[in-house]
Amino acid sequence: MKAIKEPTLYIHGWRFLQIGLLMHVWIVGDLGFRAFILILLLLILTSLRWRFRLPVWSVLLDVLLCLLLFPYTDIHYVALAIPMFELALRGKWMLSLLLVAGFSLLHALHVIDSTIDLIFWYHLHAFLFGCFSWLTIKSQQSYKREADEQRKARAELERIKMDLLEANHSAIHHAELMERYRISRQLHDHLGHDLTGALLATQAYEYVKDSEEGDKLLAEVRQRLERSTVSLREAVHNVTPTAMIGVERLDYIISSFQHKDIAFYKSGDMLLVSAYMWGLLEACLKEALTNVARHSDATKVKVDLQVTESIVRLSIHDNGSVTAGSHEGSGLRGLKLRARSIGGSLSVNRQDGFLVVCVIPLEKVGGADEATNRR
Amino acid sequence: MTVFKFSLKRSFSNKTNLLLLTLFPIAFIFFPEGEYWPVLPYGYQYFGIVLLFISIRLTTIILVDRAKGVVKRLAVAPISYGSYLCQNLLAFSVILVMQCAIVVYGGVLLGVELYQPHWLMLLYVSFSFTSLAIALAWISIFRSKESAFLIYMSLVTLLAILGGLLMPLQIFPEALIRIAVLFPTYWLNQGMSWIASEGSVGDFILINGVLWLYTIIFMILGSTRKIH
Image (cartoon, rainbow over all chains, first blue to last red; front, side, top):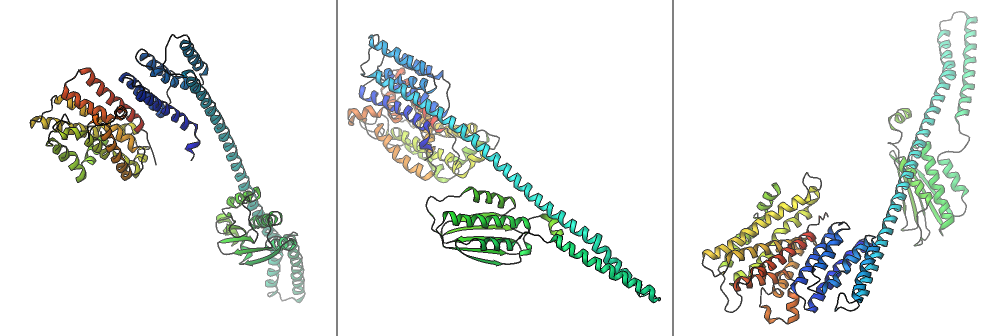
């Protein structure tokens, strides 16, 4: 099908049709074998043009062949249409026009006699078809160049987008590690220090004989434990996020979406899912629900979140009827890219309602240091 | 010349090919002579058809190579497609020329009336190359060996009838005789008539020249590298 749209197919078709026409003229014209040889030689040139891109000067060979047989046969009048066409096809339309005009002038002045009528119009048609083919090929080349440039720019943009997503993923990961380090330092510097001191004081208390000294130690232990309790409360208070995250956030989004009847099912250990994954899952859920509200006639939506040891899978399925013209928007495309950047996937199915499934692997994400940190 | 040697070996690899390439041409020497037509014994009249069949049989090796992906592998091998094609065609040409020699000089040895055996040999060699080029162009259209061969059989029958190899051209209407000139088989038939009638050398050169022009045309059309 693609080959049918190629202009070169029609150009080669025209060339071989010319040879067919010459053969027809030869058969009906009762011409001699010299004319037949001319046709075969022109056929060789046509075949060569079909296989290779011959230089422009090769047109001279066609002209020369026609002129060589000029005294013997009339068929070269018809055959001259081939060099006229070839010149116009290579953009040398002035030369081609000159050939057409020159030949017509000689014909009009009866310098050369042709038994074939309307030969001028036939030559003009060859010239015009050559010009048309030249223009078509030029336009096609220009479109191809433009399409290539656009494709290149799009690929570049995709690459930049992927780099940004990876950088984002890396930044999230580093932020998580920094937060863990901060908590660990806080626990070590304040809570750990006081608890160790209290432990040492209780151990020392067993060896103290003097009751006054013992009371002093107990007071110190109490003081350290009180300080530890305060420190622990502060640490917990600082660590606890003020905004909702994780599955609570998904719950909140679903509860605040009141347009449709939404059922939310969840299973598995939600703590296995990292913060940046929740970000993607939240974006998927929001995008799917927004699409339902904007473009769908669905009445029910089923949201299913499953967390296993290896993957987390979020599916959003509605019962809307999909129109033929529905297509994937930039939102879903962006989400696909984000899912791909963290090793997951996002797929869409339109067969029975509209189904969006986002799958993210749990084990591969984060690498060895993540696994160590979890432990 | 590895491809050349391998191609020769492959051509004789199976029994059918072995019979077709050796015994089959010999059998043609023993065909009887016609009373009024043809000018040469029947075996020599039909030998052109045999050459057409043998050519397609040989060139299907290239078709099989294309189907099996050998041509694709050649694209990354230190051998050009042109070299591969030339060596294959050279091997096929050697086989065809040897067959022509067997038929012509075998006939001479057995005392068959061939008028001018050397000219006949030259004519057969010219037509061998033409038939090889036709077969090459033919297989470049097809992907399957079987379909290429089956459709080619019909084409050969048509070429043989219209070219005047199976029946005399004189029985055809004038327009059909005129069309027959377009077929290479017509020129082979003309060549055989020339050998029997001993015309001018110029006419014989014209006949061979046309056959060579056909060879060039079909060779150009058939030498395209097609990778499936």
